[in-house]
Image (tube, rainbow, N blue to C red):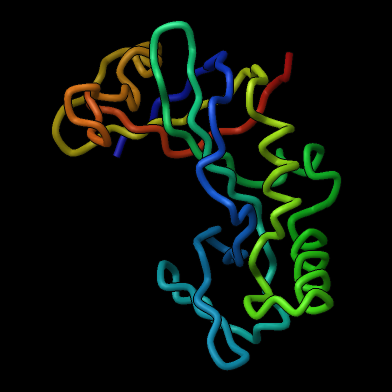
Length: 176
């Protein structure tokens, strides 16, 4: 798969998920499976004790530039400044809060956290560093075309994408 990189200035329209952290493999960053005090990575085969799991940020957003809508996901430590703590520290806070409040799912994000994230991001404009990957059918000769073809929302068939690229990863470059 070929990857293309670019910059995209866009405003956040909505936050698409309510769980902003996930247990991440230290080798490949994939989501870990936690089971009976152990973890395993389905992608690279890494295993270990659940107490050694590290967490990583994952924030899914719907954004808009002047012409298009995009569904994107922000991963990693670029979100530390927005949350004020690392993903690991936020995970500990969520678990402690949920235990004290009697929440049965100790990993569930409290409603106040979800609301704070929405307030922080919705309506704000950012410059995103975008990495797109070419799909099996189709391709692109210039990196700049990612901004024209990447995850364009198809209004005739909601949920379907036009073009031959999809946004797979991004990071915040600047907020204005």
